Image (cartoon, rainbow, N blue to C red; front, side, top):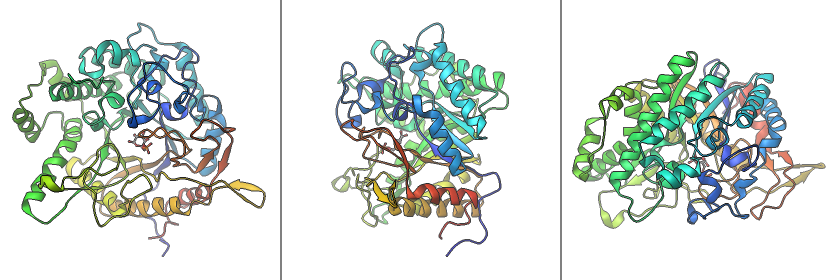
Length: 472
Ligand code: BGP
């Protein structure tokens, strides 16, 4: 049945999301330094390489660096109200600790913003999306080193001063709760045998302080900017109805929610302090840190791809294939080709949980279906008949509508990989999310030509009708 009235409020920010390392390419052009992604040719499937290697698709990615105008025009054709992209830290500060920013890098994002403004598309900028400058990983040990707070502050100030009047929505760290699961990709932390949980949680603290400082700086230099945190949302179901399983779920959920709690409440919650104590971890938290943390965010953003199950029974604690959070597979759900469990209703659950808990506007900044696409010829036009993607997105958006009807203040939705890009976990191009197909293959061949998929017109219609055409 088609909705006749849409639950989506007027002015809802429809759009798409990307990250610099997954689209830009031009990895060493115009003064850009290396980032951790330039030495992760196979994502999380194999260790870093000492230097960039030709099998790393991210070095060229989809060459957004030279195709941005064409791509943004296609987003505008779909009616995007907002476009999420990240700024590559190493394009601005090539080593991360340089005294002065790289003007050529800054100028590139000026051009991107010019193009967005031309089409009336709002920018949603992530400051740090899995792209820590490689020098900060190699010479500092990434975010385990407290000095990164000041280096990030300099970077954030540079961006907020330069673009603060043009960019309204900012995210400080992509999926900040991934740090404890994927330290190198998420936070430039070398994964050596010496790495301890103490180091990881100290790094988490450094990022939380840095995030709060960015908010503080925004208040000073960009008063119209809205700052959000960004976390992986993952509903967790008890594998059985036993109270033990329910308690295990609560503990695991807490380990995620802590990141949102600090960002929205300005201090560590009791359950987190208890967990640190029980792990024997003593965090180095200064009085200045505590003060910084009180700079809380304007909104909460999150990615949502899947839910997981959890159990207190060690024998049943099997790690699923899913995304970087792992989790026990839920026997009631189907999975994508990459083992990610598909659960639209889970999205309504997290919208309600986050809204009830934090009472801050919510922005869904990632959601989507990674699948293999077949380019076909329809009446002489090349396209992809991606009904599976349309079904996934439709069903999730219907649940966003349900969450809004439940009373949650959801301000926008940017589907992940609105144009095909290089996958973060597997570094493949064949794991496609886009409304726009990009002719590039896993072996690096391809013309980079862009083609509209069936979902392109479908999403344009959803946006045009503000969600009224979704099939509930
Ligand atoms: C999130 C990341 C994105 C993105 C997405 C899909 O965790 O923030 O960068 O890539 O997941 O994951 P993948 O690319 O591995 O399919």
